[in-house]
Image 1 (cartoon, one colour):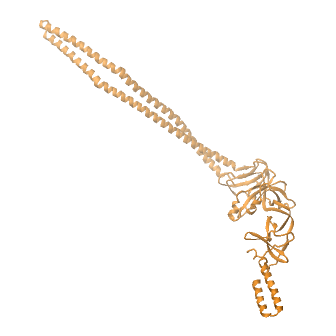
Image 2: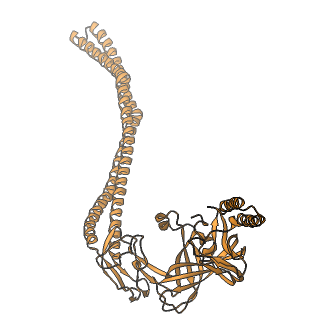
Image 3: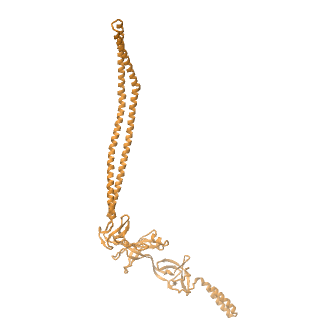
Length: 502
């Protein structure tokens, strides 16, 4: 039932039941009441079932700050991490809170597996070194061998050149001269033999020589003639066949030795390159295995972790936690992975407070802003601080757990120091954003947002009515009112659910 419907029904009944002048007066009063209901229906909300809780709008100083929970840590600290590859086991670890000096033992890790690998690697290195030495000596042998082979091929080529030159300029001309000399001698002998034969014939005709002596002179002349023909045939054979063949043989030998020299040069070059490549390969293998040996020794050395500086031991697990549970504390027998942070050693007394700021408060926080840090275990005082850094991107862990939740890591540096402050302490951070000396403010829960427009329920003339407001700055509990609510006005801090659209 709406107030308008009730009023109309009442008006109809009164017009039916009352016909006199008094009745019309009553009807007029009812009409006025209906009009009043119609006028204020959209500005009032029935409070049936809701007991309004009213507070008075305050006028005075208002401090705007962003509050967040955080944790203390040293500003400057040395992080001692596990630098061993893979996973290893802690054999012993210094107690947390122990004051250590530079060089003191912090952690001893299990190195038994590395010791076994070290022995095997030493054997591999010795074998690689022996191969490298053999390859180096083989290269020297190859260098000497190829030098000897090339020199022998060069000598053979030179001999072939000399043989050809000697034949052309010495042997052949001498042989030719010898044949020509033989021909000349035979020609002279033939001339003399024929001349003697002529005289022998004259003497035979005069009966001074016998037939036998004449025949002997004829036989001698014939023999000299045959010798001359043989010498002439020998010269022709030398010029037409022997000289040509010998010249071809010597020229072929020269070509063969030249080719052999070229082949030997190519062969020796290839052999040397191959020997050098094998040497480089053996050297690289030796150096690689030796580097592995050095690395294993270095890994074994890393199993003994000593303090890089003086300080108080703080386990890294004491300041770390996962989204499911708190990280298991470090202890002997625990497995640790490569690059895992193990111990923190603070290097100065200056402390930092780390926290996470929600996206709604991100615009309020700027680097350099002042802040107050309240440590849970030190209730009697606060510590001044300033904002040192605000992350550009939201924290990935919170974003993964809740995509709608955007938290930005923020760090603050404490400007005051106390010996009672220790790493890992919980604290409450109040970042100072703004402050007003005199302004109107109301509790933030009294503001209702509808269609992006804020309004409150304010008491006016004894009636609780909705009133539009203009908001200013706000903190976790109060909001500044620029217009819509005046000093001393009372607002409802528990607006009805129907009015909030819930």
